Amino acid sequence: MKSTAFLSLFLLIAGLAGAQTAPTKISLHQAVQLAVDKNPDLQKIKQNVSLAKADYLRSVGAFLPSLGASVGATYSNGSQFIASTLPVQDQETRSYRWGLSSNLNLFNSLSDWKGFENAEYNLESAKLQLGRNVQTTVLDVTSNFLLVLQRQELLKIAKEDLSFQEEQLKKIQEMTRLGSRPMVDLYNQQYAKSNAELNLINAQKNFDLAKSDLVALLALDPIQEYDIETPQLEGMKNDDQFNSLAGLLSTALNQRPDFQAAKVGIKSRENAVWQAWSGYGPSLDLSWNWGANGTSPSSLDIEVSKQLQDQRAYSVGLTLSIPLFDRFQTNYMVEQANVSLSNAQYDLEKLEKTIQIGVKQAWLDYKSYKKAYEASEAQYKAAGLLKETAQERYNVGAGSYLELASATKDFISAASNLATSKFQLEFQKKVLEFYIGSLNPEDYVTIR
Image 1 (cartoon, one colour):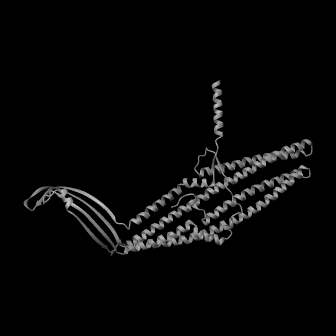
Image 2: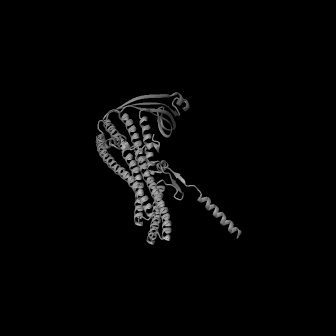
């Protein structure tokens, strides 16, 4: 019996200790950082940046001479004709060699230089593409984060409404007991309280679902509890940058990473055309070799080690290669490069139109949400005054329950609309910043 009681006490203490564990706080910046670190698509693009860096280093190496070392040994045994003796005799020989060699291209119609420029462009393009994908991740996380905050605000409103309805029920119970209000008001208030409880249950469910989606997006432990920190929302402040559509369009074309990457891609493909044409040009290469050979037995009866040490020689050569006919291979490469360049130019024009349309639509939505926010603020203030007036009239017996219930319902609706429009406006600002490319990816990931 004592052991059972002790076990129950231990489990109770352990349960209380677990219940008192503080939830992990997550800010918007931390949420984006987690998503950037765990996003598999971003990790692949980071690998592309690393590959582009390696290609850049390779293009630098094209201007440097190659250097190689070699050692070798050969054993042979068989019948050989020896001039000093007419009969054919079996001869066993061993030969050894060592050497250093180097090659350097002196000229190849500037193909190496264009390849170096291409590597620079490709590295810049890879970094820009990584930046744009980071911006996409920022927008996705911000969308889910603000949705959680919106649902949290609606949950708070539902709790306040239930608290109000419970207090109101106590007042009406006392009024009906004293006979100053009919019983139908009590029944109506009981229904209103039950309806507020149902609204609270739905608001809690919606908040939990939004929070669960955010936790899943960030690949966090779903068992652990998290506290979503509310950032300082700007509201109607600091939005002068969004007033001019022409300015937004110009900003988008100047700083959108994907558009800049497309422009860099045009330069890269122009260089590729030059590289393809270089296949028609001559190539001049410099070669250098240094080494020694030794044979045992030697005709001069010299030891192999001495031969390898004393009989060293070097050679230097220049080779000029001129293509005369390559079975139309270069012609195909030139045509392929020109087609790739033309397609890139078409894609750039299409992307420019897409950006302009996207920015304009996001700007129009922003204007709409801004007006909705202003209207919601005015509606909320008016609904608050009407509710206070209806409450005072009802308390002194000058107003009906229906008037109070209607005013209360309108106030809750106005509060919900204000919360919704506030977060819609904040999210639309992020959408607009995404379309003009002003979300700074280096706030979340180092791009070097």
